[in-house]
Image 1 (cartoon, rainbow, N blue to C red):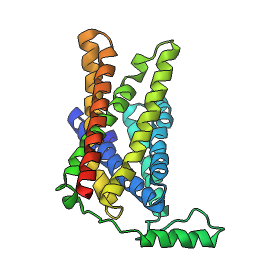
Image 2 (image 1 turned 180 degrees about the vertical axis):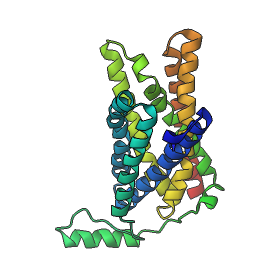
Image 3 (image 1 turned 90 degrees about the horizontal axis):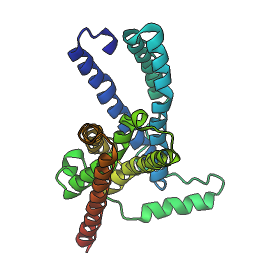
Length: 265
């Protein structure tokens, strides 16, 4: 669609629909499905799936740049769009939806352990599965949304300006790697966090709505970075602001846990 756009406005609209909305839908349903298949390893399942999402930002840009130089931007949009269409559709046809109340043992060779695992899961009190409109009526959703926004700001902020920030010192590379590891871990754990709080049954829809926090962070992070550079000529202030937001996210988490313990009594 972007390859056939004949104005900046249509390019923006088609890019938002194709890449923004499309990526959000695919990311959300894949993360949710992976988490459901591994109920006792939700964090790892979500983290590895998120890692694949991150790897794409390393693989695709060199290919896109080579296409831009060879055939131009418009044709690059068409080629990449067609390739992605085929890959996504084939992947979707091969994907299996996780059955309801799925239990995974992780030890297929020991039937006793599998039986014990199944019995322990069945004996445990079953948590309520919230529909998306029920989730929106809880205070936990808004606290989690703020947590996601505060914690995700540093990732898009650094990704958007990584090439401009890159300098020949070891400290920068250590810092950017540390931010990447923390950001990936944080984003990988949040789908499981959402499933644990609101149930796994409707997690595709629920996490899709929760993902609004990442969209907000994707705008706030680069904006902070650009504003700091324009006003001070340095990126230093943007890192300080991102750290303050992260501390704010931790404070919200503490309040979240306190609220949970209070309601559990």
